[in-house]
Image (cartoon, rainbow, N blue to C red):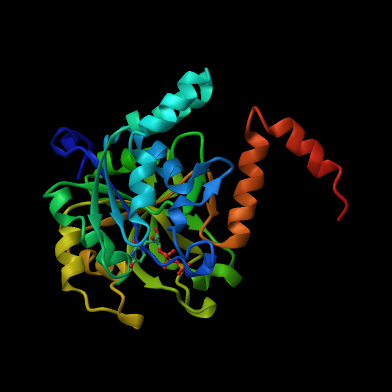
Length: 301
Ligand code: UTP
């Protein structure tokens, strides 16, 4: 689709947050709460994702919940008791941060009763999304970027009117943990090294079979045909319906682009990734960075 047709491309208004996975890599912390509620410094992972999409211009949030549903709902709900207490104590900054969460947006919830895979979780949002393009955010992928990662993907979507996935270069010895694309570079905005047109994708290939070093990470802009594609795929290993299989099906009759976003991604669903993100985010905080750096400098390894 060409730039001149831009006005005809429907706007992305909704973002889906699958948060119904079992989070086995983070047990026992995830036994009674979803990993999306683990705090990075002082905010749960899912709030970083929600703030990212709001800063990207998306207002409607749909959260797919499983176990621990109430922790997420309560987090984004108004807490009158807490607000009253903070008000009576004159703790204005804390009050503002608590209110900021519940004032943020309109959130709808849908349940995935059994963790039958990421594709299945996205499909649960079909009725709430309707026949329009939408974003998907996996909030255990935390992305620190000057321009929010989702905004970068939306810019590509708004140009081409096609689905876009976020890509990241991954070293060969780590590639088998990801969905990997076979893709052709496309010149865009005067650059040739960020945008790709995807030809094929493979979920968790062996390092020697990986078609490239470009892995799909947890940010997507999808056109609504993806729902029919997910419905068409058979469950893969472990009975799970994979989003990658849905995307491969979509690729048969729609183009899909990949965008190597600018920024740093942390896999906060993994213990080491979570620790790295905690240190980096704490160091960047105006109120903690100084003393925390001093503490780290004084540590003996
Ligand atoms: P992951 O594969 O990272 O999540 O799914 P997991 O299965 O919870 O984690 P581990 O590997 O056991 O530690 C990526 C995203 O998809 C969601 C997860 O909540 C996470 O945001 N998901 C996954 C669902 O919502 N439902 C599912 O059935 C599977």
